Length: 258
Image (tube, rainbow, N blue to C red; front, side):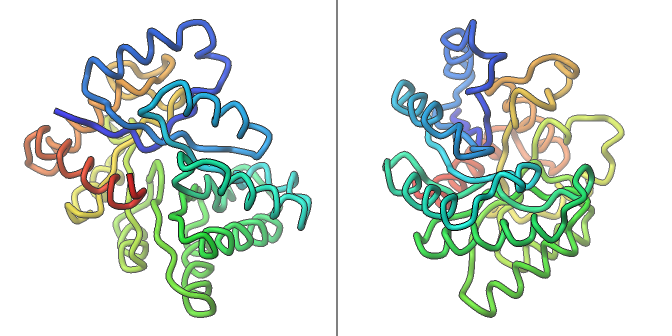
């Protein structure tokens, strides 16, 4: 059985001491490809270095909405554009998007999000979208971008929206990725959303080191735990874990052109 973890952050310090052990564990459960997300351009050199160390690791480049104040206009735009073309291992732009839960600069976030959509469209790469308490605003931006420029493809990562919001993004052609949150007993809304995503639009991730799934909740998350996400989705959707693994692997390969 093969699995693809479509969202990791193994460049973080919590992996510094035992990354080789962590990699041996992800290999042992069948994780044969991973997508390393990028929170800000300053991370990229380290992420690229990791992608060269681990042949199965691919990556993205982007600026997280909670770091939108680090956008320096044309300088950052050109930097992202350059990094995105610097290695065949760069398969997406992001993570980008909107986060109104913690941040009080919605207009700046929207501007930075739009600029990164432009980069993705220019390079014909998918986007990795972070969306928290901002589904309506984010949908409106994607609709407008599609009308003014052309269609963007990508993934709603670590998705926790309700079924109505889920359908909005499915209708826009997006993939939907579920994290360890889907294993939480009280995440009823996420369970409902996970049941309506079509087979050919479903992805799995850990978002490690955050949001470790049950039975590791509260501990450091790691890529091998993506198996628990697949197992829970299999339960919710009435499928075998092998079927979920096979379908999500196929979907990730298609979206990220792996």
